[in-house]
Image 1 (cartoon, helix red, strand yellow):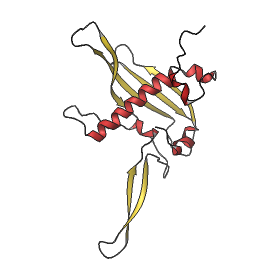
Image 2 (cartoon, helix red, strand yellow):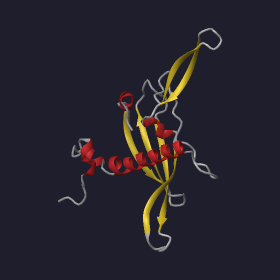
Image 3 (cartoon, one colour):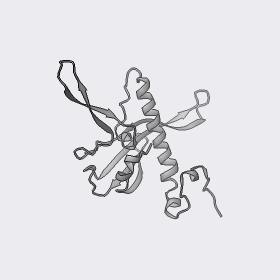
Image 4 (tube, helix red, strand yellow):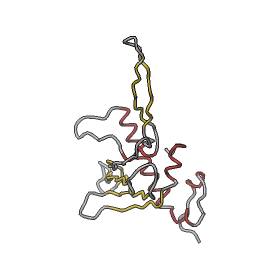
Length: 175
């Protein structure tokens, strides 16, 4: 999820917050990632919205399997020139005409900032397997951020969570 080249950018992260939809709107929650001015992008607040739905049991309408992420909407990141870590630009040389020509190729990177630009979910038809895998990972990241970062933020603040191995620890009903 977070790659080595994400770390310098994330040093400019100043706050992460979570807001829930208003009662009159479809059920959703939105992450807001606030960044200090930085040399990587101009956007100060990056948002990621997850639309969720209840998954009732088809045999028992009064029983629910809980909430499920249905869709995710990101925001556009205004990257500064040459600083976009979501892609790698490479040069390739071709000699088809007998001359060496330089062609620029843009190759996507798997990294944290891709969650802000997930593939669109088609209203008709199915996703390609690659897009489906990207969305599955995106939804998993959203659930992990919700469960292990936002809901446990006070424990990060107090220093009670201080490593990747604390994610499985239960911090509920302490005396």
